[in-house]
Every structure is written in C-alpha cells, then in structure tokens.
Length: 181
Image (cartoon, rainbow, N blue to C red; front, side, top):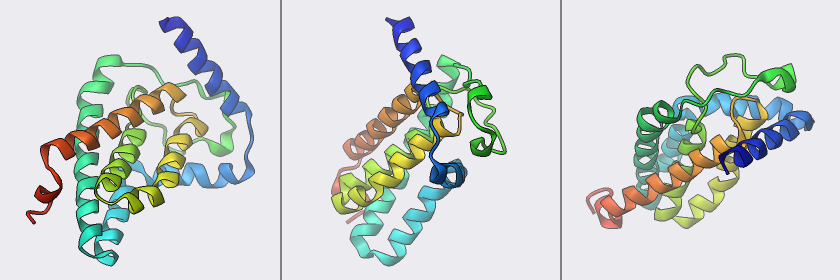
C-alpha cells in the first residue's frame, strides 16, 4: 500500500511539474515565499483585526492560535518523525523554482499546515472570512507542489494536520474563551 501511495504521489508531482501555467510561473513562487514563516497569514490577521471589528479580531486570533499549534506540531513532530526527502527539481522549470530552497524535510508541508490551520481557524469563528480565505489557502498549498518543494501527499498531510489543529484549538478554547468575552 505504501509503495502504491508513493508511486501515485510521485506521478502526480511529475504531472504538475510538466504542466505550464504562465500566470502560475509569476504568481505562485512569490505567493509561496510570502507565506514563509506564516508572514502572509499574520498580515491577513492584522488586516482583519484592524478593519473588521470585533468578530474579525476574534477570528484572526483563533486563526493565529491554530497556526501556532499546527506549526509547532509539524516542525517538532512531523518533520522529525518521517524525514522524507524533498522532490528532485530536475522536472521543475527554473523559472518557478524558489530562489532559496527549504532545508527541512518534506513531510508534512508546514506551509500547507499553516494555510489550513489559519483559514480553518478563521472559518470556525467566522465562516465568511474562512470562505474568503479558502482560495488563497488552496493557492499556497498548490504553490508548494508547483515550485517543486513538496510532493502532493506532503501538502495533503500538512493541510489535514492544520485543519485538525484548528479544531483542537476550538475544542480547548470554545468561542467565548478566545478573547475573554
């Protein structure tokens, strides 16, 4: 079973690497870099908190808390446990490769975990914000495969861990406990 999943994962990676989306070559590497260290999501949280009133502040806080749990889980447990190597970049056109390649292991994707955790956390508090952010989160996840730094399975596992982190935060801090209200 593991070999079948791994073969599927590698084949899907190769298909993405071979496909050319002109707009993707310009946008997705920038988006991927913009999401480094959660900076994209912290920026969204700051904007929501400043412009969206109390409900958006609560959603942003839940999103950031979810991101923190997901990031800690991925970086302390996930990457150290599995130790999967990154994909070979041979099949990925140079124009879409990241200028600085990640040095950590590939599984699970921390970017996907952060994107899913933040967006799911926001959605659990405020569904409209979650719906608005879903395309951006999906794009960050896809950018990691498109730029050649993750296999699709790494991204899927990261996204599942991120969403799970958001639900865990909600279980630990129900709606009324997020900001003390």
